[in-house]
Figure 1: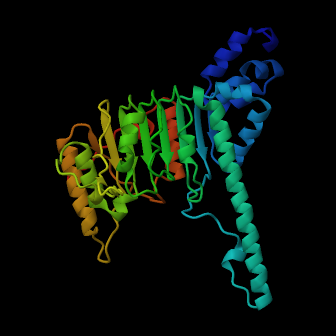
Figure 2 (figure 1 turned 90 degrees about the vertical axis):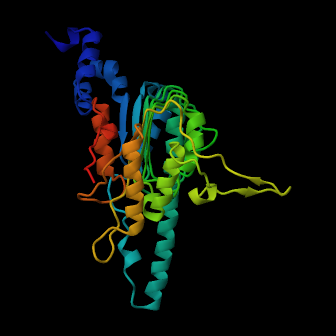
Figure 3 (figure 1 turned 135 degrees about the horizontal axis):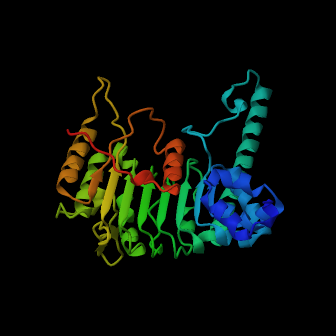
Length: 353
């Protein structure tokens, strides 16, 4: 039977059953299939580089109706695991003559200006795309590996009435107090730049009233102030009654009338069923043993893991460690979740200490 004689419903069923990476090939078979099934290509969108983000922005400018088909989307500002961006050769080399050094300085200045333009275009594209797709999204993954990109506060103030899963890698200051994601069930905060992710617990509690699962992966505080992280979790989980906001990095405000505003103690949503924490691998001393701060932190976290039912301590990534929540790991988690797996939420057993 020729393809042209088949009803459109058959094409849609076939396309629905195909894995995401095979749908594009199927849609290219003929014009009829492309016209019928093309919207399905936009149901799950994978944008691993800034250029791919700009390309989708261009497409949605021409055909904004396609944005209504997007249900799952991943954004990343780069798809490599270098800790720092790759620098041009002229930045690294030191010229021998004064005139060559002046030329190098100008080239660096031009390169930085061009890079700033690229990052600004990426931020604008990110916001424009999300402003179109946010009302329909079910899952959103934002991976930031460039430390100079700061856009999260604006993006989380968009309306996400149907969003159920959100992953943020890097570049999250305290989450905005005005954040309102009423249907969110799973929130994953990975490799945050801020030293105290618990500073956002109150915003999560009020802005995500239906949250059931929270995962914190390799927060910066595991390196800088590991014991403070453990204390904050003890307070948030109700294990510790004593609360000193300054010891948790929460600043008290001295007002003009002489009074002092004390931030409320960190709290978690009453709907929360599971809180996962994956710390950094231990930073070793010169004799190859973990630093005392790390040992103290792990001792407290292990006690929480035993005594608090909803708290789950995940083993650190010790093998082939590249950088906090690397693109490779994030991509594998996303693909697994999209294809029906648990993704970053899969259970991991902690070895007995």
